[in-house]
Length: 148
Image 1 (cartoon, rainbow, N blue to C red):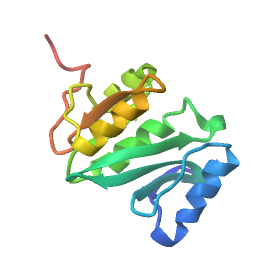
Image 2 (cartoon, rainbow, N blue to C red):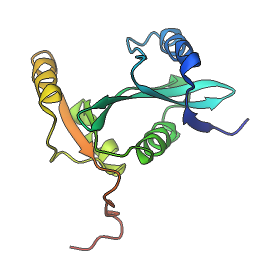
Image 3 (cartoon, one colour):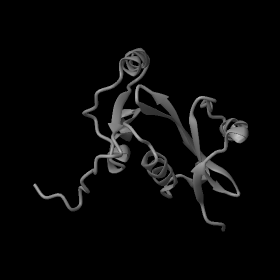
């Protein structure tokens, strides 16, 4: 099995991300104004979008091929993409995913840009959704070494 490579997807190749989403019947879509990140093992096995927003980024479209879930691909992809950001990163997720994102340094106590706050309120009308955020420049304490 070949090693997994985590890297930005070059702009001319962005249609490959939508092809990946469609191949797995995902409703997610890659957007042209975003930084697209992928995990590859020859083919794309995971992807996410980092959309510029209010001096930061909105992480959307995180999707891992079902056969590779539970192997750390999503966490590594998010970690590598976020490490390149020069401002805060926000995301919306189901409350059940809070622990997953907290292990990656995201936290619930986040101030959203106005546009994202309004969008979150709209989304919450139809389903349970929380906002999380991280600022990569700020070191996040490792919960295994932090003593209280």
